[in-house]
Amino acid sequence: MNQRDLLVIGGGPAGTATAIVAARAGAKVTLFEKGPHGRDKVCGDGLTPRAVKALDDLGIDLSPAHRTVGVRMIAFGTTRELSWPEGGRFPAHGAVWPRHRFDTHLVDVAIAAGADVRFETEALPELDGDRVIGVRAGGEVFRAPLTVLAAGAQGAAAKILGAERDPDEPFGLAIRAYAPSPRHADRHLEARLSLRDEHGTPVPGYGWLFPAGDGTVNIGVGALSTMKGFKRLNLNTLLDQYRAIERDAWGLGEYLDKPRAWRLPMSCVKRHGPGWLAVGDAAGFVNPMNGEGIDYGLESGMLAAELCLSNPSTAPAVYDRLIGERFDSFLGTGRRFSFIIGHPWLLKPGLRVAVGTQAAADVTLAVMGNLVDSRTPGAAGAVLKLADRTLRAADPLLRRTRAAA
Image (cartoon, rainbow, N blue to C red; front, side):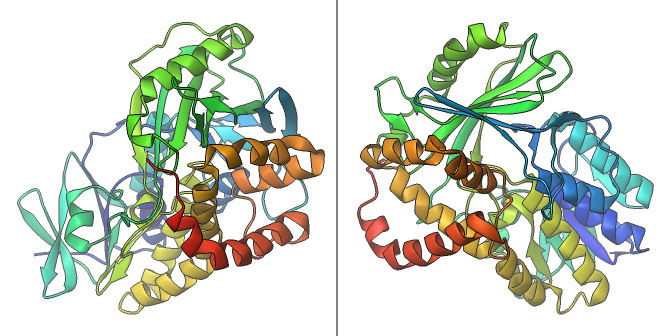
């Protein structure tokens, strides 16, 4: 029997953050990654200032990443170039770091910290009644007082544990590709908030161009499942339409690879139980208003490791309470808001308000940059608290009147 202090299923940012913190503290950690070393992960590649702060807390060297100073928002002819805010809890810069390099860097840090990483190995929970006592992987059984699920919301491990997406909550779909561009070293992320599908239906989502600083940009589009006609949405067509809009301004070349799509879980039926807990995407920690979750993955992974080191037997329940206090209000507000912007007749005026003034655009930046929560002072925090109270009360109506997918 292979006895460990901690087992981690999944080698993305959430899983590796868990392993790094625990291994550095001297815990005996094994991490299982289904893909090979250096595997790619479909993503927009953007790191918010919140993610940068988490990486700083982890002691990760960000010099390989392309530094960004803000976001350029475009909606209905209005363009606002916004800087990441200064003087708050997070640094005034973000980054772009393509995931095949970013994830590889993090897993290498975990290995250097002493974690045992098993590549190309699928791990499934080993149960004793309803308690997870370890995992079965590569023909072996590994045991530990705590197992961390960090493998997303759609895999076999998530299904076994019931950590699947709530079918009553919204989710997102996105697609991305890489293209050469002379503006690859631009210091602003660009987000076009006003998109329409091939039928002319407004899309609750956005198109992005994230400069990677290596001769390429990450170009992609994403949409929420709350939009009218979502089931008919053709992501490849939407991406091609967006590329045509931006081609001349960015000098875009042909796609360097075939565009790849993925689903964004924004909820979770169950994120902890006896002997286990879920972090990152596996726990549904994705901002419905931008599809971003790397920062939440890093934060939840670090918290999981700290609680495991303190007391693995109480870690799942304590984690659920603490992570709920940190994330649930904001993410719940975002999911409710997604029902509103799913209506085309509400989306357009809403976007005009969001970028209509500098003050409104600053709040929009804070929300889309994951820089705001219940502890945030000032206008952004006040807006979130008001939105949380209002949308919580309106939740039954929002669900009954959601746009037909």
